[in-house]
Amino acid sequence: MKYLLKSSILLCLLLFSFCAEAQAQTSAPEVYICPPCGDGSCDTQTYDAPGQCPHCHMSLVAESKIMNVAIFLYDGVEILDFSGPGEVFAASHFDGGGFRVYTVAATKAPLVSQGFVHIQPQYSINDCPKPDIIVLPGGNTGPSVDNEAVIAWVQREAPDLTAALSVCTGAFILERAGLLRGKKATTFHNAIASLREKATETEVLENTRWVDNGKIITTAGVSAGIDGALHLVGRLCGMEVAQATAHYMEYDKWQPDEGVIVEQQE
Image 1: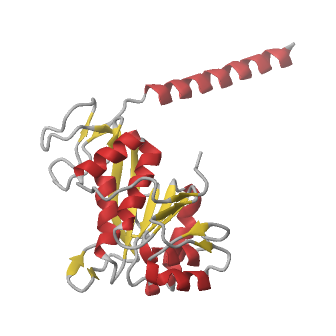
Image 2: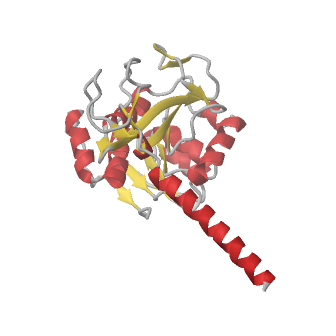
Image 3: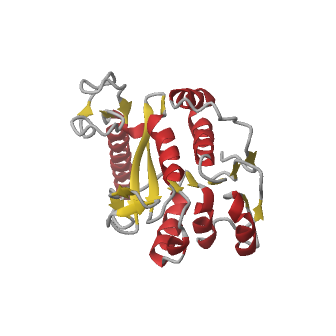
C-alpha cells in the first residue's frame, strides 16, 4: 500500500513538472525585431508586438522566424558571388519572418575583394552565431580549401544546416569538406573540368545555373549565385516571396526553371 502511495505521489509530481514546463514554453512571449538594415539605431532594438520599426519603418519580424545566413569571406573573394546572395536574403521577408545576414571569415582580419574592395568581417569561424544557411562564394578559393580550420568549420556546421549554398568556385570548399560526394553539382564554367577531376564521386553538370540536392546547393559563376539564392528563398518561403525579392532587386534575368532539382528537402 505504501509503495503504491509513493508511486502515485511520484507520478503526480512528474506530471506537474511536465505541465509546468510545457506551459512555460507555450506562454513565452514572442519577440519582434527590425530586419537588419544597417542602421545602428534599430538593428538591436526589440519589440513585444508586430508592427513597423519607428526608425526605418520596415515591418517588424518575429525573432523565432529569423534564419541566420553566414556568408563566408576570404582574400580575393568575388564581389558579386557574395553580395548577390547577400542582397537576396537581406531583402526577403516572409510571414512575419526573414533572414539575418552576416559575414564570417577564418579570422577577423580585414580582407580585400578583387583588389579594391576592403572588407571587415563581422565574425570569425570561432565566434560567429550558429548559421542556418552558409554561403560559400567563389574567387581565390585555394587558401580556404587548404585551410583545415575552415574545412572543419564547414563540416561541423553541415549536419544542422538548412542549406549550404556555394557560388562559382565555392564548390571546391564543399568538395574538400566531403559534402559533394554522391551528389550532382556545378561551378564556374572555366572550373568544370577541374571540379570533375577533384570530385570523382560527384556528377558535375555544365550549362546549368544551379543544382539543388536538398541541403547542398551549388551554382554556376558570379551572377548565378543570385539565381541560386532566389531558388532557395522560393523553396523555403514560397515563390511569391522570391518573386517579390527579384522584383525589388530589378533582377529581370531570373528564370526559376534554369536549374536542376535533384532531391527536394522535406
